[in-house]
Image (tube, rainbow, N blue to C red; front, side, top):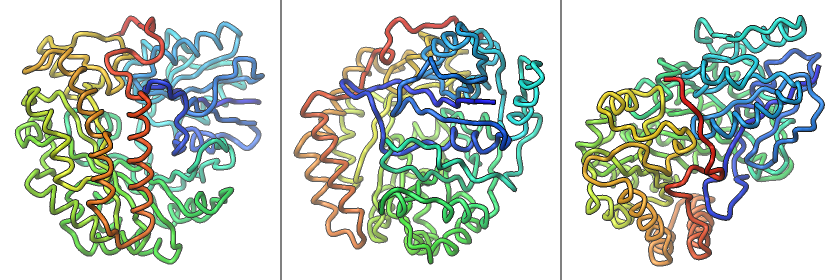
Length: 450
């Protein structure tokens, strides 16, 4: 039996049709769940186009909400050829009836318990319409991801997961809707996934990308993992919460184990906004010292910033580029607030009548899909581009590189130079985010089942 697993993606920047820096984990992990007698291939649209002529018995597609219409077109085309299609992921879990219009079967929830069952049913020609995980997996005894199947196009191709879920309840986040509790994998099994990998070059063997939503939330577990990792002399990146810096032992162990970069969700510079979305672990007054602490340990700080919250105004969001410089952020990400289906924020805005479209292709963090309180939708879109271009202008980019020198650890300084240089070049050549449009296919709409 031949199975192809596809992770769909639509480009969201003008003139950029690939995103090959980090490989996702999902497809390689799903491949590992299949029996040994199944011949499996994986395909990431981040780096490869879909091959509709491939000879397979099943196509399994995992996707996010912003890729839903695009994914449905892919699924419809395979089914038209007579190839069975299974859909899964966050959006399929939250709207299975919608997904079923374009699939032979839909996975609702986690795949660990149901994916092997799907293969058995397919062999018997008796696929069910819905495969629903009736319980959460303990995360013990998970197989090693099929790293050997990840495309060579990716620069870094060693994703690892140590924990799943998050105990915080931020209203805009879909993670807790699907994973309502924090679970941790056995440290020895995480170490196995780290050490068994063989890359094609020094950088691939050196770098590990943890795909956790917040790897340090369970401090005791994180410290045990970092102690075990220290002898490996790896470099690693992960998402963490900004309050990580309150625990100096945790910081020391993370740095000693090879932490060279973190992604933190600063989100906003309004404490009222943080309160409204339930992100109480963030304290704006502590941002600057926290970033300074990361730098003292040689850790590169990537920070996500979101515009469109209820307390935001045009004036307040246009101060963002200067605030980022004052805080010492190494590399800023800018997004438009997106109430993803299945989240508390979506439900709230839907009740208030503020959702203006259910064209899921616009739910990609670059479109305002709701009515803001203090701005118009056009204000959000135009302000986003103005802020993005200012953040990645030459003065701002060079300031981020120079002002945070010297960094006590390599490769933080190199990343700072490369990342900011890259975005400055994108800005210079007009390759900016596709704001206010629904990805690459303006005709992509789907009648939602809500």
